[in-house]
Length: 417
Ligand SMILES: [Mg+2]
Image (cartoon, protein in one colour):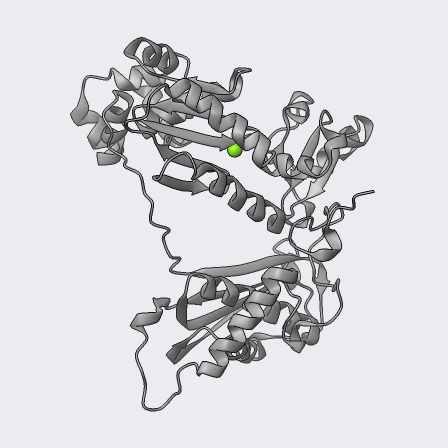
């Protein structure tokens, strides 16, 4: 048996955690550069603001209806997500962190599953302060179905413990809402007259399903029947490519601002590289103007490969800035810069070279110290000078509605009267 625990309107719930005064107000969280809605509370959904809608189109409605909008505060959300997962791990030794706000729990052999689901939900609310929905069933795909229903009912917990309750749940689930069925597959299903999850489960021609939707499509059908095919994945996969890129809040024209942006992105990418204990042997950078300025459009890409893999920010930033020198052209309004690291390998796979030095112990210790300080005192507390010293630079994202770093910086700590 599996439980799927999913945090309700996760980013909004994180903001609400530190703003109890907004408990009943409509809240929305915006994507990078305050572009589109990426999280909405039910109160905001009721006002008719769709997922992914551009903020500027709904700004007037938001002002009129007293909607609280927030810029995305990812360091806050990641921190709260860690707390959610730690809290969940007390309920089972076997847990798969599926996304920032979702986890599968293996509950095989557990008794009284429905009340266990309630215990999980109540504990999370009490210990972390985040409301969740819990779906329990015999396979991961059915647990997803149960979770979707749990989100809609007031209780927040749905357990599918027998065939009848499974069938009823599948009848209520549209084919497009089945885990892993995208919009394009949904239309293919409809041409087979498969409209609900129940139609999918009961579809007799398995060969045809396999032909159109491959082996995974058939496994999903078997999961809907209650036969586990997708098992718990507890390994955290290491990324084979790390990308750090952002659009700028305003156009950047001069080289020193662009260097600061590229160095900052490269530093962030290196931090993620060290977090997964890897090394890289390639850094690529890209810069471009806005795609909407047709007459003056420019895009430049350049990369550098290095013989000995490294995880040292100083080296990688130097390589990235060399690459930038080669593609920078004056006279353009740059709107975006990105850095990506590739050729990623584990620390035990790094080969020595006769001609180039590997990261020295001194460099490793320095990077460790930098990461530790930045974790404790907030991102970018310690950084290379080339990243710029101003707190807010011209190339920073638009974040007009950013909440304080309540849990990741001393200055953001909530004050107790
Ligand atoms: Mg969620």
